[in-house]
Image 1 (cartoon, rainbow, N blue to C red):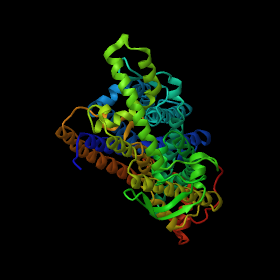
Image 2 (cartoon, helix red, strand yellow):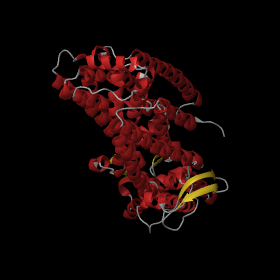
Image 3 (tube, rainbow, N blue to C red):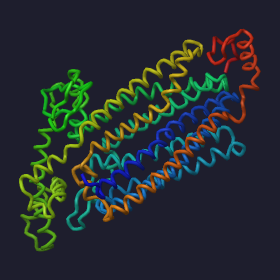
Image 4 (tube, helix red, strand yellow):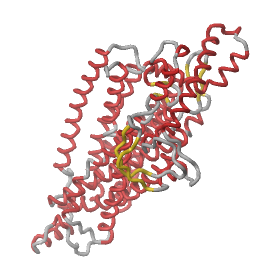
Length: 541
């Protein structure tokens, strides 16, 4: 297949968006963990908690700065590579982005400065409030971005205006309380919390293995395990809610990620393993779990989940209905005020399917001239590539349950085994540090790849959304972004590793009298401080 502007534009946006999302989940989660640690410091007045707040806050700051830099670049692409998309739906899509900048980003950026430079200028209580405002700002930022993205998945509260030839907002409340957007927000934020918890757990485990900053590491593991377990459980629950909302508004996505080629009797089974073959329309070596997919997608035992074949036939009918709306629209545009009422009524009756008629633009300049074969081909285009969705979803779900298991284990050891952590468990915590990012990226593949061939589901095809650029123009910027982001990636990893190796600036555990005696006792007894044998009684905290 010849690579054109559409494919290169999609590749560029996918690359920049997925790279940007390497920073987002850690920012969301670390901001809350840091605020929790500072709250404990204010309540206990123990210097170790101040040390922890500053150390993890430093890593949060590095991640935050690079996240901002990559996010701003990504938003510029709406004007550069997706100008017709911006023109067509900018009235709706632009509103939450503007609110995100005014309400969330400015709040977050302002209080980040106070957090880092206000230690000696604010009281402990005031600084704790600043830490929580940074966390609130970070999460508010995600809320508005995901409201915008949720509208692309489920375009409610908007209607096409034949006078302006654009989508216009009809209800801001519907856009704001879009069930897809709300489910996506809580699921994404919880995934960010798990990412930060795994990161803190892994870095702390590395300190214990090296016998460094033991008190910081022990307490950090306790916080990360508790916070991470609650977050990992919520990810599963909220992921179920996200699957249910997708089952109502994006039936083709659900059918594709399950490789459900034909409609099955209710309740549909879940395919635990299989090799989807899109050409043969079958899933080889499939292992099914009865009822599970029906419960996820419909929350009932009697409602069917339509298969790919049925949905493709329904989309072909929508294309034909859309052609009626397209023909009426051209008449409206030509005759303006003198348009007969029956033409207006015909357009209104079929306007919801206008976007499906636009799928034919890929094959013929005037969709009304399309043949039955071209209509069938456009209907086939509404089926996304199945195998990437199928496996991305299963990798994401599998890792999600893995996080529950890991967090449960460390929560149990921290609270009921006097923080005794076997070395293999500590090494496991270090090794799984990258896995939450893998799960998050798989989730975005499911969300975005599963929406194809639409930029706005059922409204605007991706092939019509791009700017009028040459292949060379897009290719040059794509290469430029790849080089620039590669440099940023090296900088990010280098800074994070530098400050992790360096550790906290003020090593409170080395000046804490009880900790010094405890480490000395372990050393003289021949025990490994990293293994953290049962500690001697310590002062109440």
